[in-house]
Image 1 (spheres, rainbow over the protein chains, first blue to last red):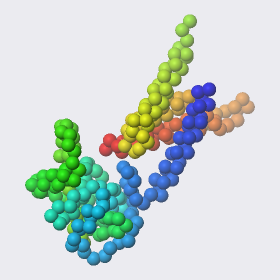
Image 2: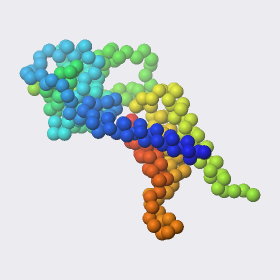
Image 3: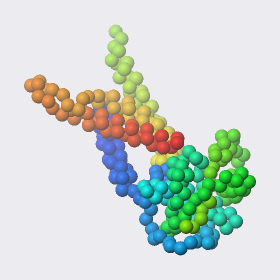
Image 4: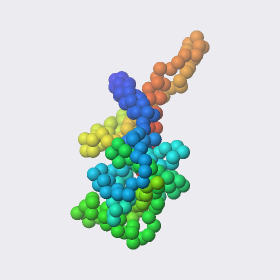
Length: 163
Length: 95
């Protein structure tokens, strides 16, 4: 009896895994925590001086490592006319490590792709300011636990400039 | 008289039910979503225990000493594959 039930469960699981695998292997865009590959979209040529249009989007999709594209969705901060993308896990995320090796990347906003260069923000004052801007954007009235504060402290910001 | 085989079967069933319960509660409390680490953990526990019901080599000799395919191993393979996928899922969530 148990084995019969387990066979039906296994069949259901196998179909689910096969479906997921099919979508995983054929992905281009990142999906939730799963990184994507080369992004699709119309590439905008020419430098962008005003990034304020970014504010109409909730997230930015980053495509790093041009030699073997790797893409992820991230949050961003728009401050003093400059766009910064956020690595929530700081240097522990793979994409931020790729960016340190090669700062050339593309970002997608809406259905358009922009060729940009990323520079990690290391000035402590600016990092603090960006953290505050980020918190203002995502207010959390509850007092933060030490663990949550530690998570916030490891965040990295990358300044985005057109190339 | 105490039968050890019976005890092992009972323990396996309990672990299997605990795994199924974790999966069920994880889905009820946090829905089916990629950040649901309890769902991944429950599936690992369930799949690994379920796989023990189908332990078999992929091929074995029959009475006439001919090699034949063991269909039981297909179920074993599926459960081990699901456990591996869920382990990767948990690893992705924790890194």
